[in-house]
Length: 491
Image (cartoon, rainbow, N blue to C red; front, side):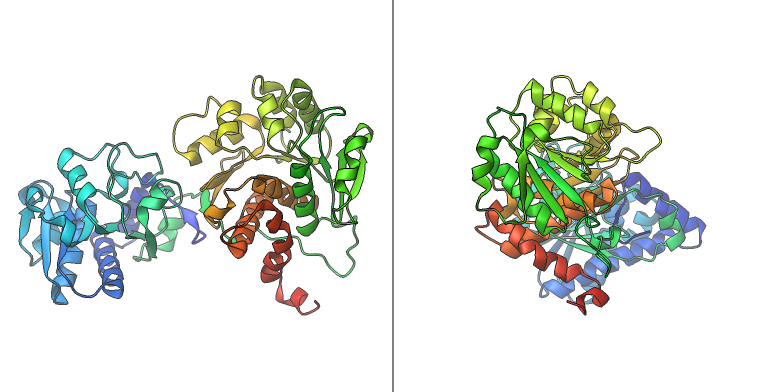
């Protein structure tokens, strides 16, 4: 299984159980986990007073191991336990018995404000709010290292209820959990260290992971060969909207620039004739045509519709017509909002029984809520999966933690980005990149995931103060960094 896989709480428990069946006891995994935390602390902090808050389960057991190892290195260590030591069982009881540090009650865990706190209270499996004492400690702690996930944050990525620990460092094991990549858990985690604790590869593989953190190893970009020509590299149409409708051509222009820079061999914009002059300063390679002459079967490999289209019933009707065409499709912005009052006709047009999805929907939070009101509960990962299954399309749910999901349940969370992308027009650039990759032959799920990564990398390269107009010009450098060595040698 890819090192970028995300495992749920239930999958982690299954890995623990299967590891023991394959000859690696859970006590061995606990020892390795505690050592990973102690090593991460020693690598980042000078020896100082440290307070280790232990819960009654396996997370607390990890904390007892940390306490033993840091004390052996000469750190001043205190240990406070939620509950009674006599009630500990299994691996946690064994770890507590081997800990040379006196175990204090949790309400004696003061003053947390002045100490380095190791949060080994509950970890990933807590599904209820922290009690009053733990919540007070979470509020007061200033420097925190969390074991697995900060207590109060559920590992599967559901929004926490009530107070949570906010860590400077979180050490997790085997694979990241959804909470490490979805907000607000991701922010609560601080720096994340992923540690290999020796779980057998077979146990991890058998977990059946279908969610991943985005990375170039998960998809392959379409590189041109020596025989490539412009039409072989894909034809993209950016449709500005129905004739006579007021359009925001800036959105269309951004999408077109991005599609060109992302490798499409031929990019056309379809707009009202009176708007054509607005494109006079765009690259000369951009073809501008009359929107009235658009035929969805005119040889385009991919079509973008929605940016600047206007929110109206005719926009919804045009989205349905395009969904019924042979071209691959990116639906964004007004195309999504216009269909929200009655999305079923659009979803029916998007479904291709027995065939992989041919369309990508790119809603932000508001558009998602309007289009998928029945996917309002659960984590963002769960909601995006439900939306993909409902629509029959790949859904790219934009945000600080962009989630891409396919109707078959596969999902990718993109963390390779920057808050500076929170700027008008950046979503239009993303739509153009997706279309370019679709036109070059990438499956819809791969195209959406790759585009999210490329878009994020462009934002990281631009840095503070970026505007959407900056992004397309940076895409060549983004692509150059990923190009195969054999292709780079010919450049």
